[in-house]
Image (cartoon, rainbow, N blue to C red; front, top):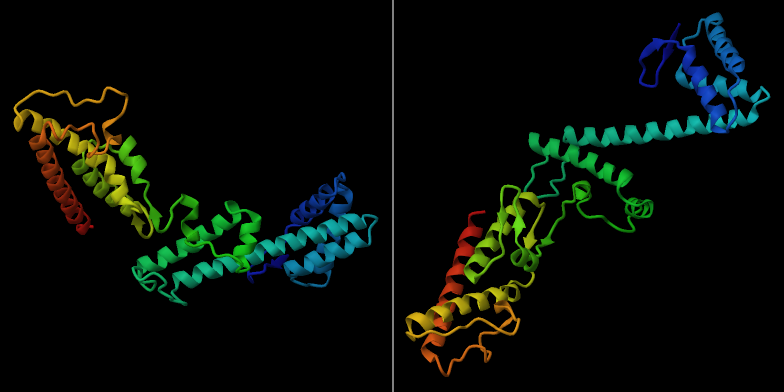
Amino acid sequence: MKVIKRNGQEVVFDSAKIITAINAAFKDINLKPDLELSANIAFNIKSYFETNNITPSVEKIQDLVEENLMNSEYSDVARAYIRYRYKREVARTQKDAFMSAVGEKLEARNVQNQNANVDEHSFGGRIGEAASTLTKQYALDYLISPMAKANHLNNRIYIHDLDHYAVGDHNCLSIPFDDLLASGFNTRQTDVRPANSVGTAMQLVAVIFQLQSLQQFGGVSATHLDWTMVPYVRKSFHKHFRDGIVYVEKTIYDCSPDDGREIKDIPIDSDFYPKEKYPNAYQYALDMTDREIYQAVEGLYHNLNTL
């Protein structure tokens, strides 16, 4: 005896599936399954189709299971079975809708080219768009709160780049350069120490931009690079002033702070630097710091232009 599945395929009738579904309905309402009842229902349904030489559909079998349960003493079980059937139908509908959306992307039936960098009609574009459909659904089903999911699906809010949510990827990221330059960072290949000059800091800015642009979807930015560079300008100035004392002023002067302050926190025009006593060293430090800044920024531009 055959059964016609929902996709039109014919398979061998399996009474055990009917028995399992009925027993699950019993358990759903915390009742011990009536094994004799479920076996009798399965037998009666199979006998009915065999006697009438009918190849039933899955839906017809489920209709008869409902009818037999309603005619038994277990009307509550019948309602539980109906709920179970409904949930399975909803799950199938969602799966069918999802696979239809994936198929649409794989077959390029609705090319929108939403990203100017991606040709959705190309092989890679189609694979990427299909993967995007999968990761969006994953985020909605397993990561986003039910309220946010409902609001997104009902167009009350729009979760931008939802397909990148699952891996923690973001679009248009402001990089925390202040922390990275002050504390150092890890590139998975090596550890990078904190910057101690404006030249080094600018080189690391370029490195961070390059590394992040390879990982990030969309743009990355520095929101206040001029402010970020202030501690490293001060560090560079201190180094040049110390050299100026030795090589320009030809003298010895200990320019290390003795009050617990760090060089990065001391402005270059503060009383810490005795410019009246050592004017040549001070001017040398200004000139060399100015030169280092220009070279550092020029190097940053050249590095970023290679991206």
